[in-house]
Image (tube, rainbow, N blue to C red; front, side, top):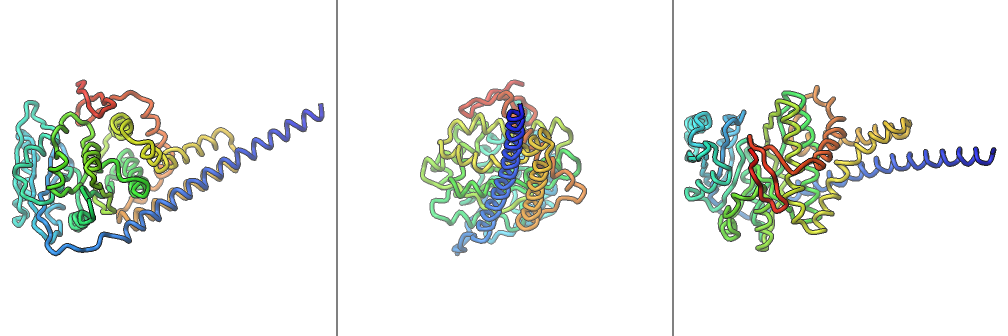
Length: 406
């Protein structure tokens, strides 16, 4: 009996040692993940494209606007302040029945007389034209050698256009796009989303470029040489695709062109008034690529995506569950270490690269940003392929096509 008791003690101790090793191994993995990603972002920032432009091409800034944008006037004013050495043509594309957005565009042109802008109202049977339909309506009036698409919730920084167009001077560059900095901190739900984006996306997006050519264009603000854009088919056939940014990247790659992820930062105001709005957006962000993008990726592209996103989505949450399940000081210490690493990496990313600022009172949400939001995101992948987007419920197919349910 004594021998059996001693074996159980030794077995229990060996299990505890194994748990301790797992916990601290996960914390070390997370530290390595953050360090490598910060180094990758630093390298990208320190190596901008050489300035070889002798004559800057004319840019057509394509700006589709959907009704209800909270900070539209602020965003339009930011575009008027763009410092670009060449000429910029502003094309404001609104629904013909959207009087509020049309008035905001007229006010922006009146407030900035030097702004070369045209307002393009688009008719639609439903009163709300799709983004692709708006862009297609404006393309015949675009006069630029560079087409730059910019979403209505984006406020570009003054040097953003110059820097993004500069990256198009690289060989076989078919598109260039930047990094988002979320700026909505007015309530807890908006703050959780802003913290999650700012803590993870700049690091992950740049890290992925060292493993594979970007598989998707982050379409908040993206610039294309017009000749290349037309060569690969432009917007033709994208009406039926739920993820036009992925399809455009795939077309560029098929023709031997590169989509370039740049470290150029732009601001996005993304207000989420409720827990339901927060869940809808997180659900859409993760279910949409899982349905429409991942089935088309190569094995290496899938592996690269997991290598980059896996530690972010899994490690802090696994440590939190391990600490709750074991109630051991070692697992709690490993969790505390990973949260400290997360906070330190966030502070460096925000201050050095994003040049943004999370309000002090919102720093208390960082543990939730590190643990709860990634677990929530992973959980959304277990739900159905239906998403809510722009007031409609959509079923997303594995081929990127979609069906409007209501």
